[in-house]
Length: 119
Image: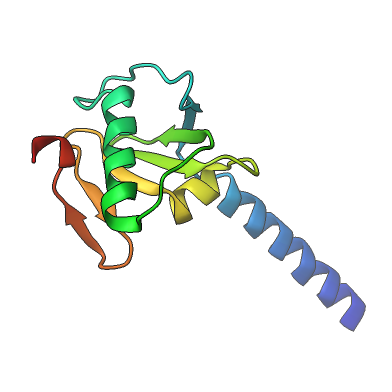
């Protein structure tokens, strides 16, 4: 009886995890060497410049590796793809850039910073 209940619980847990992981609506659009335009007002090239400026000003980091670019209906998500990038990693840890305004979401302060290209 207990084994059957555990099996049912485990099966429900696996199904829940499967649906949770497959519900990301992010689309991989390439790395920083090959991104192309996808209809935002901010082009992927401008997004790359925004991320570079954000990293230098706020994170005090200069990147030497390639970034992975993801997007949903409103945002770009830029993530370091040195060890490989995933939609979940981009959404959780990536730099979030508004595709229409170019604002960058600062995860530390949890506030939107203005587009650094307009400063």
